[in-house]
Length: 615
Image (cartoon, rainbow, N blue to C red; front, side):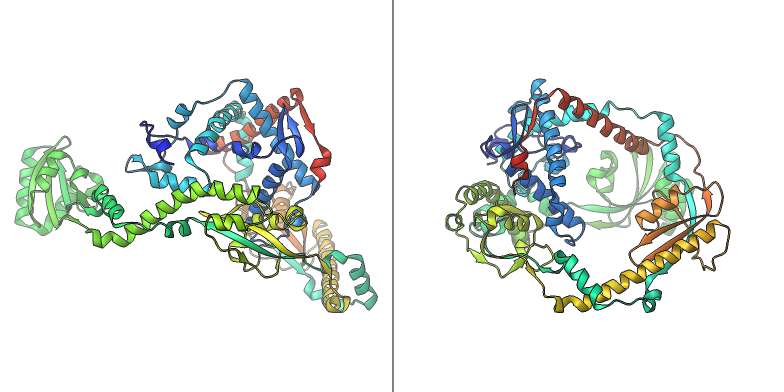
């Protein structure tokens, strides 16, 4: 695989920053693998957006949301018609920009992309292209060098087009200054919380209310949909174990990286920098006469103020870190010796306090770590090559996982009953994207394989439903006690909120309301100090023309009262580069959205509502 890169002698450079654009750029294969037309949910200037692509993007977004919330959300509740339409609008915007890039002939040749792939730190090691780093990156994307370069031929020109549009927006200086002042404005806030717990004794719930709630909210009392599944897992580690590192490979790698396993000779060095040879000779004589005074002399005489404060200490230095003339003297000195050397900066009184001799680690000493490194590289290369075949096989032979398992000598593993949730101990299957695919209609009703999903770096899993159980209604008797407790707590919270609103009304009339306020804390739009987001928004947007000012906020357990006692205005000042860039980014996004709007107005966009609504 790496011949593709290595045969092109110019080292590959990719400015990965160009990939950070206002939308996620897609790979070419994402819209060429599936035949268009029949399952297209939209067509943009002749380019189809397929249902499969929309499903994949939706699964990807659900995975991000689930990770952000620790899996505490049911994915089905997020996969709504409104969410799918919003996602489709984003894909349409992508296609419009892609079409415009093609119209403007924004295209990079393969040679230009290879010339543009990796002098960036991501692919560099010791100033040279690193096959290991590149291999690891490709493995994490389940792609090959050839496919990656093909993707960049489209992606880089599009990224540049988008950045050009966004960068053209300039935020007015006065607006930027005002927005920053509002962000930095601080307010001193105290709070009182009225909890529903104190009103529980005033609440009661009868059997009719409990049964009525059960009957009115059947969806809350259903056991989840479940499946039993079988799956196959392809991993870089397992592929590496199939092809162990040989002694010949180990020796060749050791010889190639000999410098990596050697430690150069070094010295613990102190110096005193002065202008003239006479000054240096005088200080040298004093230092030799009373070595313990070297630090004192450095603080008194050295022109190198940075090291002078530390008694002239430069720490442990290598020969390469020093001026050649100084290095020649230093590395000829013995421990405890003091000498003078000249450099372009002046004259140095030098003292070597310790000598660390150079040494090399033998092959036996590094055998374990080098073997592990080479094994990972092998596994990553094999995974990048096998990943595409694995993905295509489970998709093209969708009625069974057996052919794929046999092809890669993988066991077909089975699960117990699992629900559509990322909060279970499922090992490799504990992945929101894979679970979403496993519970899709295609997998459940048609018993087709899921697509191969990367559940971790260097790990692909494809699964297949063996058995399915639909949601089931939980019996009333099993949940009536819990419903009764929930209704009582809600009623208590409602009483607390009513009481809090009454107290707020008193406060606004200038009355005391008999409240014990917490110590004041200083908040701002950028510094919430642990305050809930809705409360923060109320506090920073409250009318403070008269102080103290009061606001109230409902929260699930009751009511939160806030008292704003002081407003601290920020000093008006010019925006620093970072802040100006951030505000400019907001304007840039607005400019980009306006640009896409203009493309849509004159483009040919058709949405297939029937395919969009299919599940």
